Amino acid sequence: MSEISDKLSQVDSLQTENDISPELFGLINKLQKNYPFFSDMEDREVVHLLKLCSQQSFNKGDEIFKEGDSATIFFLVVSGEVGISIGQKEVARLKQGSVVGEMAMIEDALHTASATATEPSLLFSITRDILSTKMPEFANKATLSIARQLSHKLHEANRTIHNLQEQLETAEDVIRSAEGRRKPYRFSENTTMR
Amino acid sequence: MSKISDKFPQADFPQKETDSSSSQENFDLSQENSSSMTNLIGKLRGNYDFFTDMTDKEIIWILRLCGRRSYKQGQTIFQEGDAGNCFYLIVYGEVVISRGNTELARLGTGECFGEMAVLDDAPRSATAKAADETLVFSVERDILTDVFPTLGFKVAANLAKQLSVKLRETDELIKGSSDTPI
Image: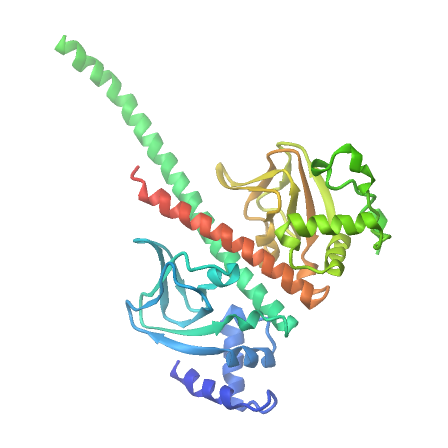
């Protein structure tokens, strides 16, 4: 993925969006194909987005942001993996193509969770300028991409809740049947004590 | 396209927030400049975050494109597995979202639901039932992409904001449930 850094520098020096080099086209197509975030965007919109983002590398264990930090940017996982935790508890793991830190940006609030690289990771950091209404069509697509990702994450979280609920019910069943078995035992124990 | 007044007949919205003295608040969308329309727009913008940053014109667009449906307590709004082409905004009432026997969320006035299937272009992943007398606006998916970009952007941003809040609450629930030893 080191190729991305070379091409990103090309993007920064682009005077107009018309003189995109073939290699840069390659990158754009790759992003559109492999990253759902870009899949609805036209080439010039991808270029516009790339202009608004910079890349950051993290080593395994590096903190990306923490609970309580203010949020002026959000991230897209280009490669690697990011763990999201509240306090000591990990609530999600996000892989290539996922968006990270968008909740605080969308809600215009502080980060309510911490993000840590769980393996060496390359991230695009994207400023909230992408949601500027100066380019409504682009902002619309970017926001829809973010909303879709949120929807996926909520799906996952709901599934987790549903599974936890089922586990709880199973555990309750086990306890109930164990108690059912214990009662006569207790009774006989009591009678012998008497 | 059918006449707007067919799709959106004279409305007595919002029933629950007005007393009988304001029954002249009935509005007709064919008279966009009527004072009752202005009144309604003001009310929507003032009381529902969803409309806060929208212009009068945009609110009128949404009202034109949305349907109104009322449900009695216990009535099903949609079921897991149904096709989902619209999302809902709760004008008043309460809606319970569940999967199987698991209640996932309880939503009230001003909150949206059903947006996940719309965004993902997928069937409903959960069931929605009215937990009270409930009035909803139903908004078709088209509004996100096919009407005009500034409105699509605002609607998408609103949905994203609400999703973010829900996700945060659900994450807290996950955290809480696994903190508690069984």
